[in-house]
Length: 345
Image (tube, rainbow, N blue to C red; front, side, top):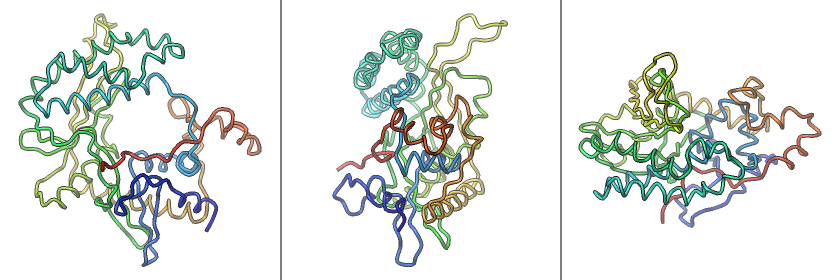
């Protein structure tokens, strides 16, 4: 067994339940010689982007020190909506409750402590007052419709850690999918997952940004598998992307354009053939992941180094091989193994 394989096998077990996949376990060797591969969207999309990125993130578990203000606001918004829709499901949601929950989430995420590191970003967002404005505007946008047309079935309900979501297999691998959709709802006659997203602003092309989109397709496939296990025979072929703008749109947009929305919902539909294509692609990617682990060979996609603001590991690969450990020690940390969720007791 290679050093990489050994490091993958040395996992932190987060539960005593033998039926639950331990945190950090990427694979198990089956009696027939095939591998059970355990993936989620975050992991396999990183692998598809760059195998070397995956090796740093999920084998070495190297992470940059600190986190951007944008990422922290995204975490706060996710927590706010988790509590918001839990209250909606319980029938206790009001505007005042929504504001109270959002401020509790603000404190739990320690957003005020970010001021020394991100004073401009904090001021631009508006601090706690900005949080009150954003959740109040969302309540005005969503509550009347959701309270009538949505039945909330699950909020932040994870799946897959008990191997209940087999999405495909071949002669090399059996691929199990893990994830945690933000919300699972019945909207009138349709069952569907809901994925909450935040962006700086909602642009005119927002409807085209989520298809193709591996995460939404994965949530649909997972929902199909879980419903099949539960004996629920309904067509699940869509995911709703619930987008929020972190920045409040200007009341005076340039060029006489209409004011951008702060919130937008994008329904994403997939055919049977498209979802099967997604399954097939994940199996192929998982088989390649097995090959990488067995040979400890990770192809470097240098085009991905410069996506958007640059890959978070660009500084490592920009240094000569002998100096990369120095860069890691100076600017990165070793993190706990990634998992989309922890199973409840």
